[in-house]
Length: 274
Image (tube, rainbow, N blue to C red; front, side, top):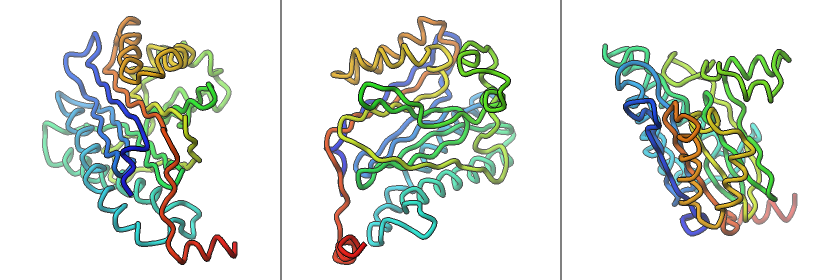
């Protein structure tokens, strides 16, 4: 099923005001409903190698895997959609590739990357992330963070040492507790959610929320929601106006209409007798 006409999507990436090169990578395949964003780290130019591998791996693996899975039922015994498992496994594969590259090439030692990705299917979205790159959703004029950072600061918030408001003002936001490529295996956090026409999804590297608070992100999206390209550029500008201390990458996607999966005979019988 080609989902390209079901969404309006824009991608923006910027080096920022302090860094001399961009270690973020972004990509999408709207025919299969895939969005992916990675924020690399470690060593001269190695961060962009790690993020580039992560994005390329998902763009290579997931469309073919989705085409294969389309022949099967959309749910498995674990309760997760097959698309969620495909997304999780592709990220795990990217982790292995990055880790092997880091071990094999001296210039890449210590490299890693955060990642956030989503895959739309059958009026739902599969979400997977590692690290502190984020996914937000705007629904009914309400901004909601759909991913929870894998960071030391977030762990301190969860343990009650900081409030969310204090965490927002903290200068120690960049100590991630999970990243791709650091170890041979990685724990990928996955989730699923229903999707409604009118929803707007924002994937971003930490260069945006570290500089711009959620209220201003929401206000900017609401103000420029009729033109996603302008909204994306304004978010980047806000981050740069606040110092632009990191690379800033954004994917904004607006859901235009429902995208139910085509249901075969077996699926119809299951719905009738469920």
